[in-house]
Structure formats: C-alpha cells, structure tokens
Length: 207
Length: 268
Image 1 (tube, each protein chain N blue to C red):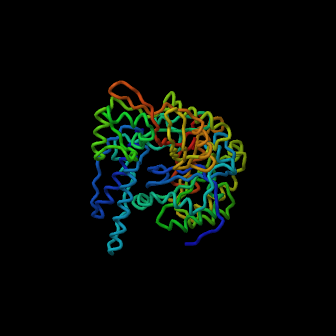
Image 2: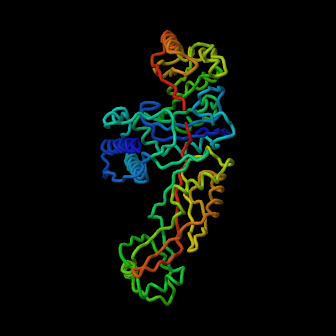
Image 3: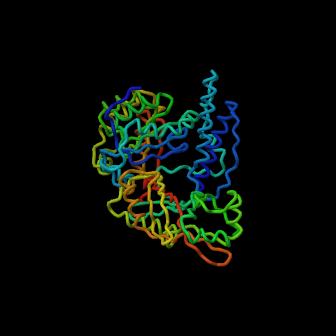
C-alpha cells in the first residue's frame, strides 16, 4: 500500500448503490468540492465552496465505501468520482486507487476543464470517463460556464487518440436559454467526427 | 420509496447469486417491511457481511471465490418497473424528509430501542404489587429492583406487568415527529453545517416532567452538527412516557430513547 501522507479532499456527498447510472455495475458516487466552472444551472452549487463538505483522507473514504466491495466485485462496479470537478483531486484519486486496487472500477464525471497534464496523469488509473461537454460551440460554452472550452477539446482529443474510446461517454445537454436543438445536433455531429461513440443527449431540468 | 425497494430487490438478487455461485447456504427471507426503504437496511448489510465471512473461509481453505460477472443491467431489467436512477440526488418527500431552510432531516423513533427504567420512580414501583396490565410489548426493563423487592423470576415480573397494564405510551415530542423535525431544522439555523449528511442517533432520557436528560450522540455525523443537535435536544421538552393502569390511572415515568435522524445529501 502506498500511503500518501497529507492528501485530503473535501467531499460533499457519498451516495451508495447507484445501479446502472454511472456504469454497468453497482457504484458509489463520491462528490468532491471545487470546480473551475460556474455553470448557470449547476446542480451542485455547494461544490463551488471549497471550504464546505467533509474533509476526507483517501484512507477514510476507502474505509467508508469498502462496505460495498462485494457488490463492486460481483457487478464490475466501483466508485464514480464526481463533484465539483474530480480531476482537481488527482493526488487523492491516485492514493485511493492504491488503496482499492485495480478490481474496482473508477469512473470520473468530469468537465475535462483541467490542464492536459492532469488528464495524462490520471488516465492510467481511471477506467472510464463521463464527460459533460456542455456545448462544442466556444461562444455558447463560455456564455454558460464563464470559461473557454479550448482545453476541453484538447483533452478530449488526447483521450480519444491515446486510449480506448469505449471508456468515454460524452453527455451533451440541452441548456435552456443557452443552446438550441440545432446547436446540440451540431455538437453531436462534431463529437462523432472526433471519434466519440457513446453520446448521451439529455435535457437540463431547471428547478 | 419504490426506488429503494427496487434497489433492495436487485441487491438481494446479487447476494443470492453470489451465494449460489459459491455454494453458500443463504436463506433470504422476503422483506415484509412496509415503510420507507433506502435500498439497504441492517438486515441486508448483515447478509453481505455473512457472505464476506463465508467467502473468506473458502479462500482460507484454498477454494476460489466466485464473485465477479453479475450484470446489474440484466438484474435491473428483470425487475418490473425499475425506475432509472436520477442523475441528481434530492431529498425524497415520501421518506418523510422535510426541507426546512437548508437542513433536511428524516427521523424515526424505533420502539425497539426503548428501555424503561421503571424502578427509578417510587410511585411506579409501588404500583406493581397491587395492580398492573395486558397488550403490552415492553422490550426492555431495568431490573435493578431494590433489595426488598419480592419477585420470583423475570417472567413472573413481566406477567405481572402485562396483567395490570391498560396501555403504554412512548415519549413523544409535542406535535409529533414532523414537529420535531421542524424544530430541529428551524433551530439549527444559518450556522448549521447544511452540507453534512448521514445518519445520527441521539440517546436521551425523557424524565416524567418532560425534560430531557443524559443527551448523548451515539452515532454522529460530524463534530459540529453533533454538538448543535445535542444542544437542541437538551433544550427540548417532550411528552413523557405514560403507563396507564387498568384503573385508568396514568403514571408518567422516565424513559430512555434513541431518536434516529437522517440528514440526506441536499441536491446533488
């Protein structure tokens, strides 16, 4: 076991027994605080506040979630790291992988809005990606998130060229007031041309 | 509630298949619980732990543990009406959770946790000899009887109690559990850790005068929220436990309780 001393992260949610939601098996969703984006309809705005949530070490989280190890192993399930932006917690996820071993599936629900080096570093320890691409149009993306999407596209391109596209699911939302059905269709078209095979078109529900 | 039951069924099916694959004798009884189901419960968890122990035994004996290869997708599709899990987690109103301000809580007082300290009160003790009832399901007595108490066995004692009791009322917060949840939610206030989540168990004694003593968080969520909730309980007044005799006389007495509170994640 490679214990990473001093690695901690704020986690605002741990949700057990998610079935076929984040992957093929029984999964536990772990939601980190901290996100580089400020999406208008963010479902988890509490994740924007870095001081909120419970402080975990990888060891503490592992102790808490391994209660479902039998289900994970039986169903090819494991942990889905979401948030917030899980890729901001690279050392934590690396340390967690050392604890749980390779048999658990680790999936990240990410915007990919992180440096390419982070994606390259996390790629060997992650089994799958669920990528919320927002919109492929840079203007729409920036209007909705407050950030440019060039690094997102770079990262996606790198993942598609350097790994198995089967590991990647890209979610394309209809975003009220920000994109149209035509924009969504354009995004999907472009994603397909890049080599994305698993595309999940969905609607943001505003509450 | 329906989603929790469906999750429970699927997880149970996984356990059955693991047991079958590994020749483990697992007797799974049909759950008859009609209340809110979160998809798992202490009984379900105990079955998982049992399977783990049995698998460990087999591994120690050099046998391979066969646990991989079950498809939840198939298991899910075999369940009629399985609802797709939402991408967001929100407090479920049918769990009797209530969102007050920013704090969501679900509570319950399981009667099985109630222990009765009857001998703590002279007036109750005095009533044993001449009187006492029926239809009473008391699950625990503090049998620290005084030295001069004349009883032959615990069974006799219980029979005596049952034979002379008309009714038995457990302690309750004025207005019931929903009011209790309102009270906690409203009084935790803006300083509460509204992102904390998990299950909490608060132990306390409701005195005959309704005041709460010996408040103790026996299962905590985090230090901050535990302290806030404990402080609120010390401030509360409850309706005390009442022992109603066949004669119609009602005697309040001290009663130890455990209140369970569930703080679900809010909007994810």
